[in-house]
Image (cartoon, rainbow, N blue to C red; front, top):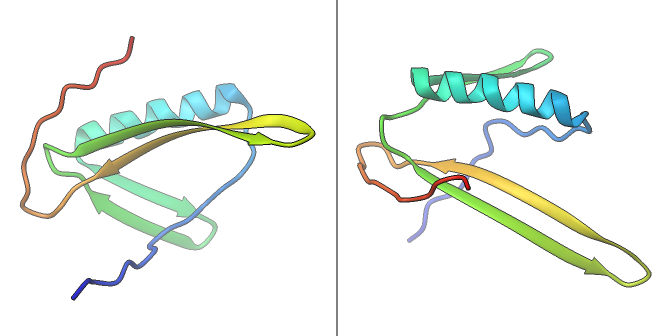
Length: 92
């Protein structure tokens, strides 16, 4: 028997690269502090981030006939309450 996934917050918008970088820096500070609050309008949700998480990094390229390829860079932070683990990813 599998559990259901419930989306607590979802947002997608176009931004300038510098705005994305600023958002990532702010997010990094909040992850390090252990708490992230996501807000958009009246919607708000807070997540408590444990000391150890799983970081998934994925870069995709989707070919589209007659159009330029579409690229996607995904950064995903996952954790299971009470679970601990370590990884070896680094930026190069």
